[in-house]
Length: 95
Image (cartoon, rainbow, N blue to C red):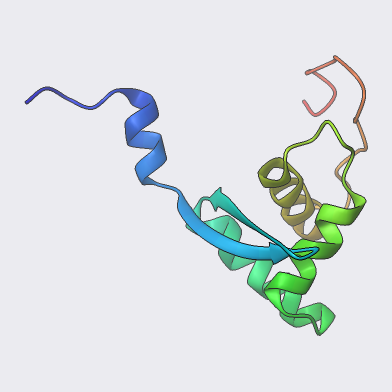
């Protein structure tokens, strides 16, 4: 058997969780490190993980996937100086 494709290897690193958002079940796949960061953020804010995800979901732009919004929230929590670059095409603004 050959080596798995890069996408298959990357998918194995993700942990999928099912969460109830606005009465609908949805699944989100993130790296374990991001789930851990989100758990810490939820604890710090006195929320359950589901409540935190619900708030992030409600506040995200419609064109941003939920998994992406969760990762960005984790980054913003731990890197408060992270600039707001939504809606731009410039990838060099962070570096």
